[in-house]
Structure formats: structure tokens, C-alpha cells
Length: 364
Ligand code: SF4
Image 1 (tube, rainbow, N blue to C red):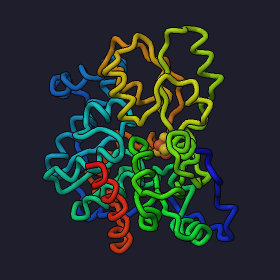
Image 2: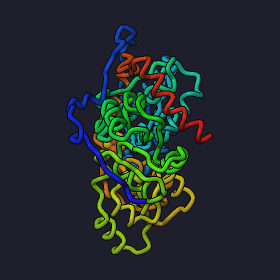
Image 3: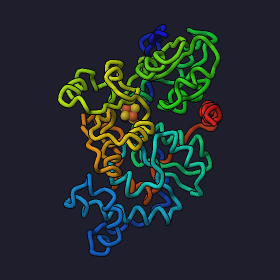
Image 4: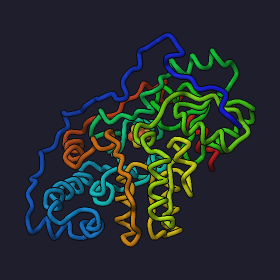
């Protein structure tokens, strides 16, 4: 079914886009900063962790990282903290300090099962908000509160209210890559794994789908439900082109191409498989291709490469600048100084939780 319209902020009068991040701090509870020297003891203590990343991190870089890795892992115990790391985090974070890894929803859901007082979210701001929404009693920290997202920043709660005025009675589905303000205004959330299922679950012929226009196009291609979309896009995935992928295919017709549905339609058309980050990883584990082009943020290929060193990853490398704001020194600072803490207005948090939980219950 074709999409029936694509709307954006210019279609409405207000222009206050708001910020994607909201810093807060609790520096009063600061601990002393640990020693950060490369010693034989640190080398021994972290050798098993280096083993996990040696396929992607050169030996010369490890002495700079290992003291941070060691200090962070000790501080986690002292703070009764867990580290959640998104698939797009760098290998030393993903493999050496994270307790739970995955896509944004996997992270938030797994965090509800752990007995920790503190969650350190190694990802972007909307992910930390989702963790707070699902874990309201825990302290949720993000090592750099400026880690935003072009999708989440493209739409506000007020935009959703204006869309509802324009299309009365049409339900609104929001991709989880949105702020708590937006989640509070919509009927249900979705991820890139379950977007089609969520849209069809509403039992209507038309749905407003925000904010990713490309994910909306992909959903529209898979369902008979008519989709009214928003003009948001992921600044990482929209840079890939079908022509670029065709070049990889022409150079090696046996190469496998797997793409994230946030990519434009010409990229999806070139792909052998389209799926969420979790589905892409599972696809590589299951099919074990000789050579694969993973069309998504390029740290994910590094992380899967660390697990599957015999698969050759062809890397059209587009980095997410927001994800890359999270580093080992900032994670350490977060645990030492308990910053930046995620805070959400309780009324917004309760409304946003309904939209997220409606999706979770649908899945289960
Ligand atoms: S990769 Fe795209 S969707 Fe993910 S955080 Fe970065 S800008 Fe947002």
C-alpha cells in the first residue's frame, strides 16, 4: 500500500524544536577518581577481556583502554550499577564493560530484570529515557547528555498533537527513537523489528507513523494499512545509496548485503535481507556468510566481527556521531560523579510508559 502523505515541522506553525537532551547531575555523591596506569597487574587482570576484542583493537591501543576498563568494572560493583550498551557502541565498551548489549528495546527490557540501583546507558538520550520509563525507581545515567539522535530531534509532543488535529481519529504509532514527550502523546510504540505487526495490530485502515519516513515507507511496502508519515530520517542510514551497494555487488556477485529498514528504499531494494540490528546480527550468526556488507552504523560490524572473526565484513563506514560521544573516560566519570542523571516529568513518564508497555504486551 503506498504512503498517503509525508508531513514535517514546516506543515505546522510552531518552530520550537526543543533539545534532545536534558542534563542533570548528583555530584554530591562523587567517589575518588581511580588511578589509570597501565601496570603488569592491569595487564593480567584484563587479558581475558582483550581476548574478546583482539580481532578489532590493535595491541598498541589496549594499554590506553585497559586501565579505564578495569576501573569501570570495579566501580560498577561499588555503585551496584549495570552498563547497558547499544549495538552501535565501540568494541571496548560493547565487549569489555557492558553487562547487557542489544538494541534499545532489548536493553530497556533486560534492565527491568536486574537487581541494580543504577543503570549507565551507553547509547543515546532517547534510549536512556526509555530505560527510565521502564525502570522508574532506578537511577539512570548517560555518560554524555548531548548524545542525541536526528530522528528523536525531528519531532516533538506538540507536533503529534497537531497531527492528531489534522487527522482526527487516526491512531499514532511512534518508533522508539523518540523522546518521552512524543511517546506520551502516541497510542503505541514500535521498534524496527515489530513495526509492521504493531501497525496491523490496531485494526484500522490508516495509521500515522512517526518519525522515520524511510521506516514508514518500508512498513507501507509490507502492509495494506495506509501510512501517513513524518519527514524524520536517521542521519547515518540515509547516507547509504543503492548505487554504492551495487558497486559492492558488481565487484563480488557472491557478497551478501543486509540492511537496516531506516535506509532509503533504493538501498532496501539492493539488500538480500532487511531487518533490525538484532535481526541483522542473528542473520549473520545463522547464515555465516563468507563476505557480508552490513548496511548500518559501522561499529556494529566491529562488534559482530569480534564474535565471528572468520566472516569478512565489507564496511561502508557511516558512524553515528551521537553514539560516538560515549567513551570509556566519560563512562568512568559518570560512575565516579553519578552524572548525567535522566529525569522525566512523572506525568509524561506514566503516559509514555503506557505506549511502550502496549507494544511490549502485544509482543508477548
Ligand atoms: S544511528 Fe541514526 S537512529 Fe541511531 S542514534 Fe544515530 S542518528 Fe539516531
